[in-house]
Length: 589
Image (cartoon, rainbow, N blue to C red; front, top):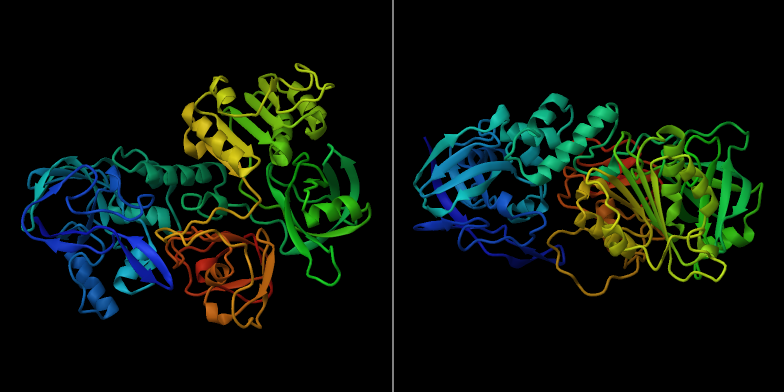
């Protein structure tokens, strides 16, 4: 009979770590006497980061005495105490390779249900002063698991743990953990996991993404269950190759298109609808080339690539392209990249854009008109007026080929010569009120591109009318939003800059979206640490090559991963939390 050995609680507190402040509830300590298990927590317990921990499906964390013994031997530690792994219940029995998702247990007055394995996170390594711990928990198949509280009540150390129901599919905690984090997954077992009602919504979303990959791209690389943006197809070529400007076209008052071709007129590899190119722009012979990314706006199967560039008022790169680039000039170009691509299938599609954000969704519209004209399509676009409405005629022509298409064009300040019903359908901005009245089906896939505020507002509006968050896809070419779980804010965000101190003398590391190139300094240990020193917006969670949150497109160059990640990144990507440059590199950060 399994037994509850210790009940551990702790409230969040601020802890200093690597010069930063972490707000965390990972420190748990045993309590004596009864403790009430409630829907969201044990009494006296709390979590510092509710985005990654806590909530109804993760109310109680469980870890086993047997795993304590295992780590004492593996790590050579004799200082591990109950609660040391951040668990609320230290138990004798209930091993991860026997307990199944959906199993139910009674302890004292309370009833619990197993919902998911532990989520990998750097804070367990912080608590144990062992940075490798997130990876070790996965590779040693000893993650621990979360419980949902079905019946609230008092629990106490020493009580028996009684199984009262078994979950369907008999999927152990260790198996579920391996399906998400380890390679060589079974499609059948992923499908089985999705038949377990008790599985938490977050893990269901991850397994749905893995199942889609297994069904639509069985040879696909990457792990969309952990990082949807890291599951790109293999790039068509490594690094940068010269492409020639074959033609140009003015698309609006501020938008110029470039057609790029192979210098020998050979067909270029097909790009996915919605992907982008990164180009090097030699705007100043005395300085390194600028790196910029632009969505492909032309038909995905064309033998040439079309990119379209809006001239920004203070944009050095866009001004140079509009002013100086000529037909016959050469641009070093990286292969088409990006996971913001039109999904296959028959589901309805919403293509929504503002301004020059129309470019990737226009490529998707081409793909729909050429390949699946029977899909229902909503074409939503916002512009200032007709002079700032790129591709208006091209989009109208494509929509005429889609018999089940719906169009809403919003002009915020139409000119006298812009006629409602001809050039636009609605006066004002494309926003939540318009979306609410469209009658969008809940099973639609939505693709949004435009300013960050536009995508945030429209994403909220789409969720409000019933679209699931995983069906709403966005593309943004500015530096991304940082994800630094538990790290306390330090004031205003700083513009990316070279790191303080003496510059390194290693390979050049270019952060394309941030617009800086700095020499590598081994003192930083990893590319993630270098990026942090430069105030480049980064995303991470485990810092040991498990969670893939830090997975970044490697546009040029090569890296070495030390330690080796639990699962290799997709070809052409790097896990910057454990990567170092082998030579000059270009990162999509």
